[in-house]
Image 1 (cartoon, rainbow, N blue to C red):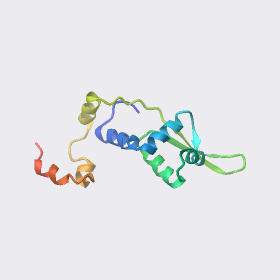
Image 2 (spheres, one colour; image 1 turned 45 degrees about the vertical axis):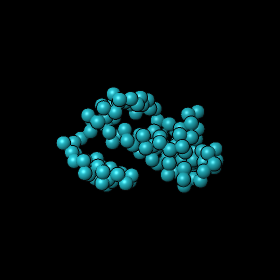
Image 3 (cartoon, rainbow, N blue to C red; image 1 turned 135 degrees about the horizontal axis):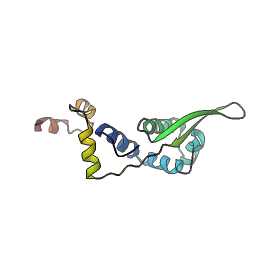
Image 4 (cartoon, rainbow, N blue to C red; image 1 turned 30 degrees about the vertical axis):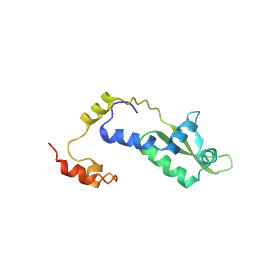
Length: 126
């Protein structure tokens, strides 16, 4: 992942890293790939909860998962960090906004869940 993101990709990235557990996942995977059970043990979380976080991170391009068979025939799901280098500043955000297709975003169409939808709708758009 690089700095050439549109606003949807930037939002997905920020949402993927914007959670304490996902920051911890990145920290654990920084030293190399781990299988889900080991990662869950290290983080002290359940595998279903960990899978939920990993799925969001995978959709945002932060991690890559793959299945491998162990010597005893068990399927193990391994995850590792995908290479990414995101610098967040005014230029990055402005460039992402320029790359965005015109029209309402998914958040604007569905509401962003903040309860501010009425405020946004009364302002109008140019």
